[in-house]
Amino acid sequence: MPAGPAPPGRPGRHSLTEALDNPNTRAAYDQRQAVREHEQQQAHQELMDSLACIDCGDIPEQESTWEYGLHSNHKWTRRPGGRCRSCHQQRKEQLEREAEEQLDAARTANAALRPCWTCRGSIGGNEDSKLELREKAGRDRLECPGCVEARVVRGLGPLVLPAPTKRELVAALVSAPDDPWWEARVLHARLYPVRDRRA
Image (cartoon, rainbow, N blue to C red; front, side, top):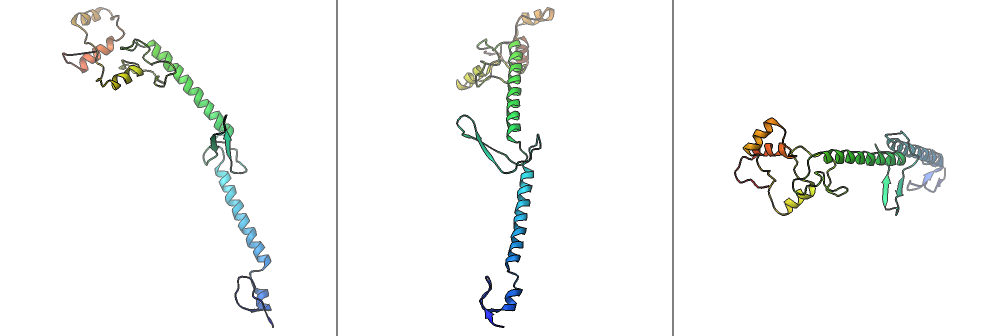
């Protein structure tokens, strides 16, 4: 048999029989290509399945990155174990509502507590300020966040309230003192039993 040109990928000259027996035919190539495409499609589907929304279970058809906002400078990308855009927006709005409700509850609770020892304002601080307390102030808190920060800036130590006098302690046995900081004063007298006490 005459030897023809070498099939692609096989150097040298080969006989026609060898060429016909060559596994690198168009049909073999098409079959390998179909297998590769199937594997790619399967890998892509597995990725898309991993991007299923944890809230609604929606599976995207393709990977996507959405730009949104007034100036489109915020990007949101769907990630494995994440949410679809609508569920993402709903979750964000829900968290904002919960934060607002928590802040309202903290404002109501702090308004009912004793005032700040230093400025006599709300113990929770100025509303809508970056320092405003977002939870109910502890029973040992004496100053609003602004006064606490001012004390730190001036390099002052912790605030210690004046100790109750003997007369006040005796009067407290009969009736509750008309002093919003009474409990804190009694607590401080126990915690800081010193003579030089400055507010």
